[in-house]
Image (cartoon, rainbow over all chains, first blue to last red; front, side, top):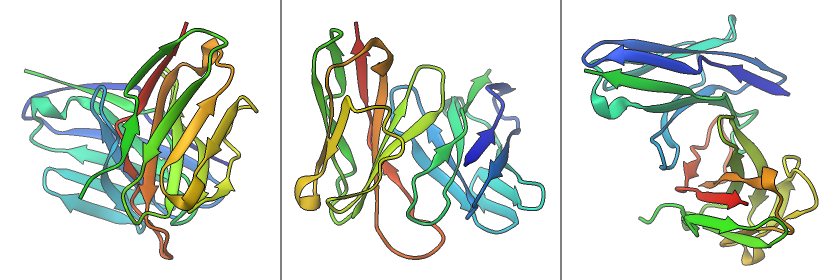
Length: 110
Length: 116
């Protein structure tokens, strides 16, 4: 089976940088993905790491360390619209269902 | 290109009643997944279709839940009879079926089910 652990809540100031960590225990692991969900909305894909290292997409970056079973999502230049829940998730393979962490609720304050 | 759509967006029913949720995946996506998020908890997998076949239904909580995907297009998830603990948001997601390390799953907006 798989389990992913992430903090339940994070608060950060507009314009700042925030890091959301995710640790995982898996019987099979292909990579770590991150999803964003605004209240009442659909989870939307942010990033995927199959290999160790940092993937950067605009203000968002994601990191993976397979040896540490650890990853994180880094959000820079925070904006109020970044307030949402962020989920790490892992598939066993390309077509298998996602196993999600419980989500981290990010609140961006002025 | 249209995204994943789900109907209804909200449903409020009484315990013991029946509800049917519908999901229309992105055209051409053979993989269709059902997930559920109960208040305050993680999004949990329910069922995976590849075309019209059930690939994995290990997440279905019990036999009150029945999912179908006739013709390999849209899917329905029926809850009969509904219980209080079935309340939550039901998400549908779809992806292309291909080899490789990752196929991005595209999620619908969800159906918020409230059982009273």
